[in-house]
Image 1 (tube, rainbow, N blue to C red):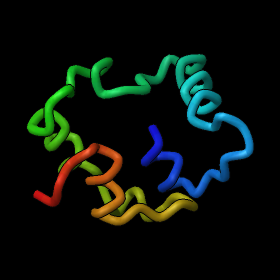
Image 2: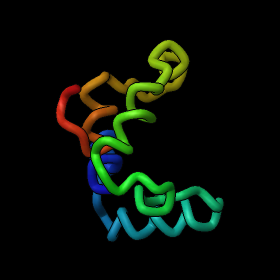
Image 3: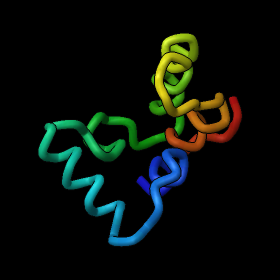
Image 4: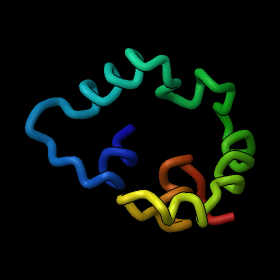
Length: 77
């Protein structure tokens, strides 16, 4: 969660990770890797590799491959 907050450049005025986590819970979005069965790096590697960088280039926040690896808690693969 902290890496996502850092990647999104959210400034911490309040316990932002808790606010973001509560928001994700209210939307029904899994907010940790355990909830999606991806406890191990090997399990997180698949969705990280599937990130569609072309589609992601259409959003206001730009993610690099390094950002994706940091979000999924992976070393470069």
